[in-house]
Structure formats: structure tokens, C-alpha cells
Image (cartoon, rainbow, N blue to C red; front, side, top):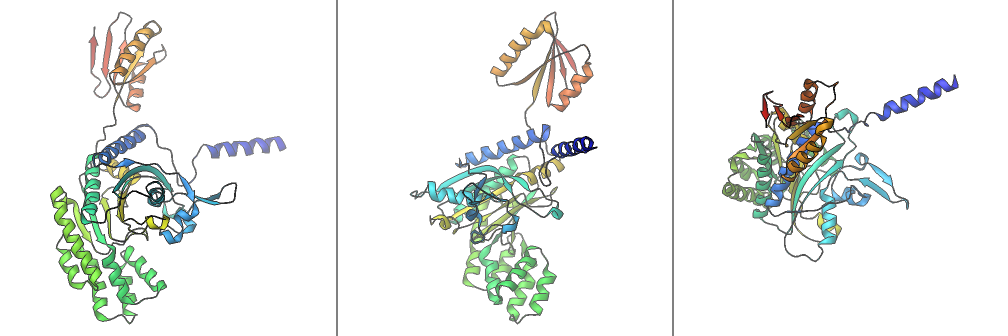
Length: 424
């Protein structure tokens, strides 16, 4: 009985090891190939704009993502300890890591710093949310420039990158922290009430916002401004309405900044993708100026999040204005797949040989690879049918199969159409 229980326990452990933990998953075959192809397209666009690659560690000291930095709450971090007892965390966001690295590696640099990256982030979401806990991000950061031109460059590059992947039906919503912060400051609320109000606005629960306003002593003009807030979403015309209710000088300057951005975005020819949303505050507390998100259909979340964070890098010792964005690659892939957008991830030629044609197969494959073509060679057995190789080819993104004949001829089969042609 003891032996039986032991074996049963081992089988249970082995079965568990065959599956991934909750919130993570394997990516393979065509899905993996397509994801890598999209990464390459985005990477190329970053380079075309003059951005340079940087890699930061997957885990950092806890302080890099502490509450004062403005990232996620501590309980959503994956925390562990090193041998010296220091608290380490898997990065939930790559921007603070870039800020830390830039403050150290570019401490004396006075000219603009353009950096781009790719990496995975880890957030311990509640299991009830049904979201992945490991996600891939690609992003870019422009440090050392505080200007309308810098803001516009980042948004134009992001739009060009999305278009490069084949995405066409999307919109970029732009807001400004100073505008919404101006409204919040005018309420005179304490921190707890402000947090509640911000959460309601982020969740688009404007009924809840009205309820809080009615129960407060906030003056009428401020209440009216919050009532209008849901309508301040749309094309450039909403900026006129926003300017009318701007409660502070900084809020008014924020609207003027957005107007200038729109005129410059027209120079890039991307204005058709632009909308404005004056309720946007950004996902993280470190945003200080414009904030923006890109949306498309086929996914339940934004595919891009970004904004200006002029005081983040100084928390690591270097005072420099900065702006950046992160493309949420897994969300983008969901959108591309559901919109049935073709992703060219390259095709392979399969050479099928027999024992007598093996030397020929190796020489032929070597020649193809020397010309930059992908080639896989596979020995044919008597048990396998031609249909089995065709099905295999479809699973492996093979475009054509070359059957090497012992009479020195080649039978070429197009895997996509089934057409055959004898060569030689």
C-alpha cells in the first residue's frame, strides 16, 4: 500500500509539471514565429528613428519599483530574496529599469538619449481577472528632451510601428496629466477621496463621479467641469471645449500643448489616427505631461501605453526630462490574429531524401542556406505516406517540398496548393 501511494504521488507531481503555472503559457509553432516576426518589424522601425538597444535585468532590487516611484502596488509584485537577504522583484514595468540604467550609464550625457528594448514583465494579477501574469513588452524611451517635438516624435514612431505590423484600424488617444490634475486639485479633496475619484474616472464610472460631487461641497463650476469630462473625447474640436473649462493656468497650457502636437502630427501624416481624451491620467503615477494609449478591436485592452515622465529618472540621481511608450505585444498579437492580418514570418523549403540521395540533400541544403533560404531536410521512410509529409509541412510553415529522386530528378510540391512539378 505504501508503494502504491508513493507511485501515485509521483505520478501526480509529474502530471503537474507537464502544465505551466496559472497566468503563464507556452508559445510555439506558427504563433511563436508570427510573434517574432512582429517583434522584428517593430525593432526595425525603432532603429529607423535612431533608437539604440538596451537590455536591463529581469529582476531588480525592490526599491526600483517602490511606491514612491509610481508603479504598481507591492502586493502585485513577485518578490524573493538573494543570499544577503535583499528583497528582489521580477520587473512589472521596464521603464523604471531604463530610468535606473540611464541615470547610471549616461550620468554625464547632456545630449538626447534614444533607447529601445524588448523584454517580459511580471505582474501577480488576481486570478479572477483572467489576465496573463507574464507579458512581452517592446518600447522606446527618449531622455533629455522636453519639447512638443519630442512628444510628437514618440507618437509618430509608435504609429509607424503599428502600421509596419499590418495594423491599420486603430486609434491613439492622447490626454495630458496637467489638465485632469487641475480639475482634481480644484475639488480640495483629501487623499482618500481623491484616490476614489481617480479610480472612478479610470473605470469610466461617471455616475459614481456625479454621486461623489453631489455629496461634496465642491463649487458648481468644478462640478460642471466633471460632468462635461465624459464628452471631452474625440477629434481636435474637443480641445476647444476643454479650454473653456480649464480650471488652472497649467491646465490651459496643457490644452495649448495638445493643439501644437496635433499640428505637428499632421506634418508626419498620422493625424487620422489621433483622438483626444482629456480624462486620461496614465497607468502609472510617474507620468507628468502627455499620456497616450493606442486601441484597436480584437483585444480587450490597449495595445500601447505611454507618456511623459519628467521626474522619474531623477529618483535615481539624474535630472532629465523623458518620454516613452510600451507596446503590449501579447495584446497586439491578439488583435492581429482576430483581425486576420497576414503576418509574413518566412517560409521553409523541406527536402525529403532517401538513403541514396542523402549526400545530394546535404549539398542542396547547404547551397540554399548560403543564399539565405530556410531549409529543413528529412529522411523518407517506407512507412510514411506523401500525405503525412504534406500535413507535416503545413504545421511547420513549409512552402514547398523537394522530393529527391534516385534518378537525379526532383519532384517539387507546393504545400499551399498541392501542385506538383518535375525538375531535371
